[in-house]
Length: 382
Image 1 (cartoon, rainbow, N blue to C red):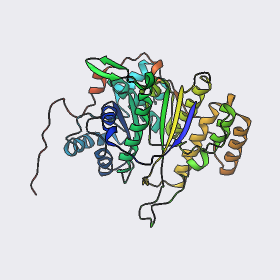
Image 2: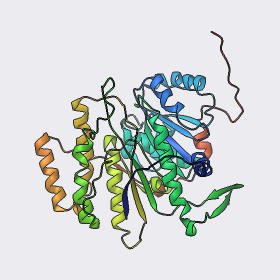
Image 3: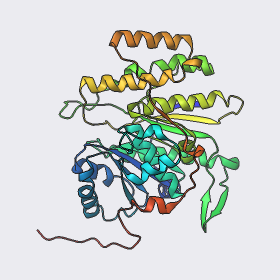
Image 4: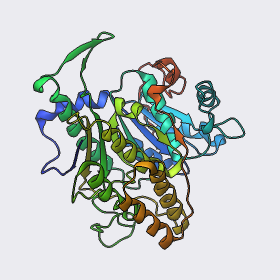
């Protein structure tokens, strides 16, 4: 396994532009939306590439879906590959039922609430499109979304760097449906964003270098895990709860998903668990933590919300209890006692690659906001 922390002396060179164009046209963006205002959502989407597929998975009240769709069509007329999926969509629920994933369905037959469930849906839709080679997850609650430009450019450099190493630094060009496609590295590759700082809106300084309230509890547990499983010492994980991250589609469909707020921690654990089974395959699993330069502003949640996030994140460890080192188990018991947490076992959903689902762009197209025709921008006089 290869795990490293990355920061760049600079972000973009003109020589990167060809790679950037390829990356953006082959990357699906999945946006998790719930109660954020349409203005906040539009701000996030405005900073995403117009030629990339963008899949918004919303769990807002169902009556709001058409209003959201109308506003997106009105304000983002150039984003022609935009998809809007409601988490309670009947077609999505029916597909999961046909695949035997009953645990994701509630008593009403719809997909249950939860961030992990929304990301599972978004990944399913990205996979169905057929052509994306990478997938990036962003949250909608970003109040200064210009930071997403940095995250996207950084992930392009990191993923395309891995791609350029395939076949001794020479691209393996394949022709797929009449398009020239570059071969992506066969490893499982995940890039997770570490925020430079997390100041509050109205703060006098943007350099509030402190981890999130959930991250500072969960991330230290990974140090003993890395030491016991891989002999990696003195590597501090900072992205156990990274809401902004990307991975190859191959990685996304190989990993299991989990319920609610456990998803980021669980998938990091699942990726490490996959690496324990590939120890004889050098570089078969790559985890990169990118240290961003941009401060991150999002809605500050209350203490009870954070406590729930911590409980669900830590519950992920117990799904691997059989192989957890003793030191990690002792740390977990201490945290649970100190914080008075209730043990919550996340629900686990199978990897998409294990389902009897073939890529089918027509499935995703039913959620597309624009038809495949040219659109003209309308100008309005005051």
